[in-house]
Amino acid sequence: MNGLDKQVLLDCQSWLQQGKPVWLCTIVSTYGSAPRPIGSLFATEGSIRSGSVSGGCIEDAFMALIQLHQFDKPLQVFDYGSHLAPNGSQYELPCGGHISLLIEYLQPNDYHFVDDWLAAAAQASVFIRAINPDTEQRGIINGTDSALYPSPWLTVHYQQHWQLLLLGISQVSEEVARLATRAGFTVRLCDMRENYSQSWRWTAAQGGVDVEWCSADAFVERYATPYSAILALAHDPRVDDIGLMGALESNAFYIGALGSHANSERRRERLMRIGEYTQSQLARLHAPIGLAIGSKTPFEIAIAIIAEVIAVKNGIDCNSWHYRHG
Image 1 (cartoon, rainbow, N blue to C red):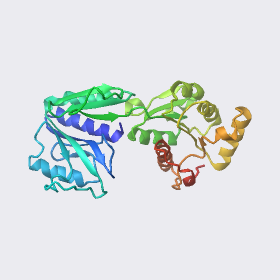
Image 2: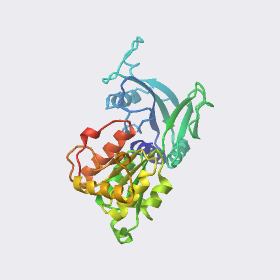
Image 3: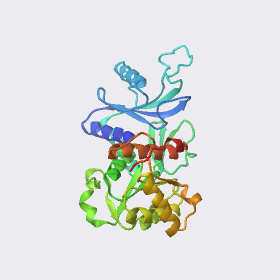
C-alpha cells in the first residue's frame, strides 16, 4: 500500500475524529486504460480532497454528485460514466478505460473501519480488504486467499512486501528513503560507521527510518527476499562492497550501487578479485545507479534511483536509459 493511499486513510481518521462525515472511494475494478490501479483511494469531507482515483475528471464529478446527495448510502458501487451515459451505452474515460468505485459514506462512529485498515497497512505483510455492499459488512484478512468471500463480496488486495534495503548513511540515502516510503516500499537502513550517527536525522520519531547498526552483509542476509531492492549508497567500500557481496548471493530483484563509471569499474574489479564473481553474476549489478535524467543533486539522484527500481519491479528493461552519477 503506497504512501499516498495511507495519507488518505490518515486524513479520513482525522476528519472522523473531528466529528465530520467522510466519503471514501476505492477503485475496485478497471477495464482498459486507467490512470490509477485497483485499490487506489480518494476521500473528502465535503470540501477538502485527499488522494486520487484519476487525473481529476472523476474527482470533479464525484464532488458535484455529493452535492446532489447521490452518495448518501453507507455503501454503494458506482461505475463512473453511467451518470453521463444513462441510456446504457458505454462511457470511457479520456484515457479510454472504465472505472468502478466502491463509495463508503462514513459517519464519525465508523472510525474503527479506518483504524483497522491503518493497522493492517502498518504491518509488513499482504492483506485483503473485503466488503459486502448488501450487508454493509467489512473485514481485513491477512494473506491473499479471497476464496471465502464470493459474490456479492468485493475484495481488494494490498501488497506490503516490496522493500528497499539501504546500505550506508548519506544525503542520497535520506532522499531515497523519503521517496521510497511515499512509493509504498518498506525501507530499512544499515551502517556500521557509528561516527555517522549524528548525520542521520530522519528517524522513526520524525516519521522516517531508524538506522540498524550492523555490518552490511549481515543486514542483507537478515532481510533480503525476492521482493527486495538492495542499494549501496555509502560511497564507501567498507560498507558498499561487503553489502554487495551479500546482495549478489541473495535473490533480491534489484541490486544497485552509487558511483561514477570509473568507480563502478574499480568496484567490479574488486568484486571479481576478492569475491570471485563472474561477469555474468556482476551483470545483476546496476552501477552506476539510476535512470538517464541528468540528475546531479541528491534529490534528483534519488528520483533517478527510485524510478529505476520501480521500472525493474514492473518488468521494464531500462538499460539503455542509464545516466551515471559520480
